[in-house]
Length: 196
Ligand SMILES: Cc1cc2nc3c(=O)[nH]c(=O)nc-3n(C[C@H](O)[C@H](O)[C@H](O)COP(=O)(O)O)c2cc1C
Image (tube, rainbow, N blue to C red; front, side, top):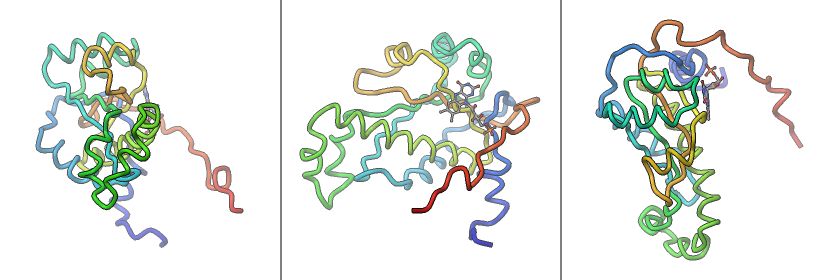
């Protein structure tokens, strides 16, 4: 009994949660997305830099433009999911740093004056936030289908700008028929954890 989280919540977030490949038509509302964000925004990032940005692809016209950039095998999933989000890293996150890390507002200029340093930090910390986001989708009783099989430069040009780097596209909704293959194995504790 080492975990204090309710076992049903453990199942919802991890043991029974799967990466869905098909979805029902049930809509995913802005209220649900806001509740997800308002939960996962508390996940930690370095200096509280919070570089994740989320683009909700809602209109049929925008959805069509996104599908065109997806790998062929991913196209039907992105075309049919009730909601699709493009997750990206804001490489200019340092502009918000004095507000987000008021304890040391000078961090912006000490560590993040140069763009390559910002890109490295944004890639790591936005990826962490993307993981929190996926778990948050599950906390809302929904399934996420994260995908990196798409044309990154195409998506950047179509939906973002040079200051934003796409990380992943996430299909969101309730799982449909045959939503997944059998669960793949995971590495066991002893294969992953060493103690020194
Ligand atoms: C960053 C990331 C990228 C992924 N890219 C794709 C993808 O392009 N296409 C796809 O069908 N699944 C993709 N997946 C889904 C993974 O294959 C899936 O999460 C993994 O096999 C675990 O499946 P499970 O959650 O159902 O156990 C991606 C998952 C992640 C986290």
